[in-house]
Image 1: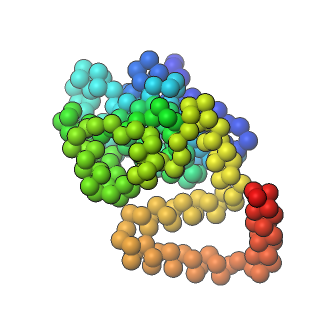
Image 2: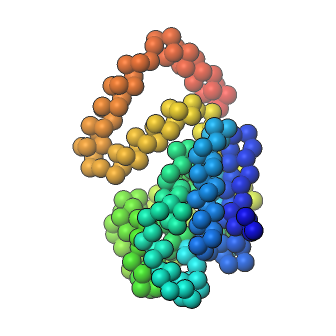
Image 3: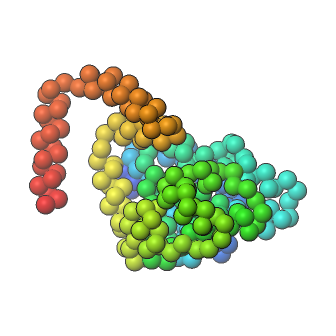
Amino acid sequence: MSEDLVLLDIEDGVATVTLNRPQAMNALSKALRSQLYQVMKQVDGDDSVRAVILTGAGERAFTAGLDLKELGSEEGALGAANAEGADENPVKAIELCRKPVIGAINGVAITGGFEVAIACDVLIASTNARFADTHARVGIVPGWGLSQKLSRMIGISRAKELSFTGNFLDAQTAKAWGLVNHVVEPVELLPLARKLANDMASIDPTFLAQYKKLIDDGYAQSFSDGLALEAELSSAANSAVTPEEVEARREAVQARARQQD
C-alpha cells in the first residue's frame, strides 16, 4: 500500500488497529475504508489474534466520520453512506471480525465515526472523547445502523436528543448513559484497552467467537426470540461438555478469582 492509512500492531494475541489520518481527524476516506476492511479481514483470519483494539491516531479524533471534502468533490461519493460491501462500509468491516473488538475512543467520534464506534463490542473512552450525531445537520440519513442501534444502547429519548440537536456528548455523560464502560485519562486509555483485551484473549477463542455471535444474533431479534435462540444453542453446546472439563475449568476460575482478590 502506498500510504498506511490503517496501522496494525500484533502483540501477545492482541491486535491494535489504528485509523491513521490524524491531519484529517482520521476521516473515513474511500482509501482508508478499503484498508480497514483488509486489516480487519487479516486479523479475523489470524489464529494468533485473540482480541482487537480499534483506535485513532493522535488525541483529537477517533474518527470524524466520512470525509466530507471527498464527498463534496466526487460524483456519487455519497453512496458510501449506504454501501453494503465491507470494503466500503467500515461498520461491516468491523462486524465481520469474529474476535472481540474494543473501541478505544481517544477524541471525537462524529456521525459516521459515531457509527464506527458503536460497531465495536466494548467502548472505553479517554476524557478527551466526545460523541456527536450530525446526520440531520449535514442532511444525510444514517446508513450504517446508528438510527436503530443507538436508541437500543442508551434509550430512545436520549438518542433522539443527540440526533435532533447534533450536540456533543462528553465522555463522562456517555458513561453515565451506558454508552461507554470506562473513562480514563488519555495516557491510560490504551493500557486499559490492552488489559481488557488480554483478559478476553485468555478465553478459548472458538468459544468466545460463538458467544459473541450468540449475543449479537440475539440482540438483533426480539427478546423472546433471543431467549429461544439461547436455549437452542445452549442445549446443544452444553450437552457436549464432560464433568471432567467442568471441574478443570471450575478450578481455573477459582484460581483466577484468588489472583484478582
